[in-house]
Image (cartoon, rainbow, N blue to C red):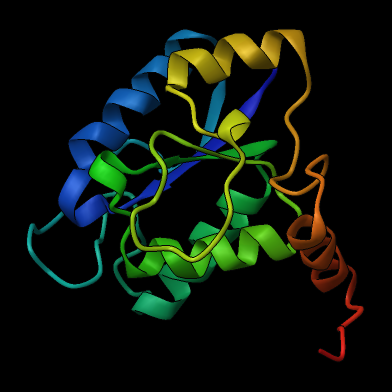
Length: 162
């Protein structure tokens, strides 16, 4: 198929859910650019480290490498069980929205002040099926209304004086 996906979410709280999505994309022939699917080194620490992470890198370096892997994918899938995404995922989402990366969510985030079209809340199986019929789209790429237009202005670097 040739599709690429990155998967983000709270690896500390929901890595098993992330791995289930990872397996679904992998079985469908997709390349998962992040995470690489390796085991977490130590449970319960504030910033997750994987067996595949270079041990000499500090946390900011690991995060920057993750962003490179995330942003090179054709789309990003956010695993959000019961709407939970976590702090690092919120940071990554900001970078992804600004880069106009297509984003899809397993469930609508519970504590994130961003409008997410219903078309972007799908199971991984639904997303795989949808992408065989149509290309992925950014969150606000085709959305109508004032909010969506203002989001497109932000991405374009045109800041409104409100």
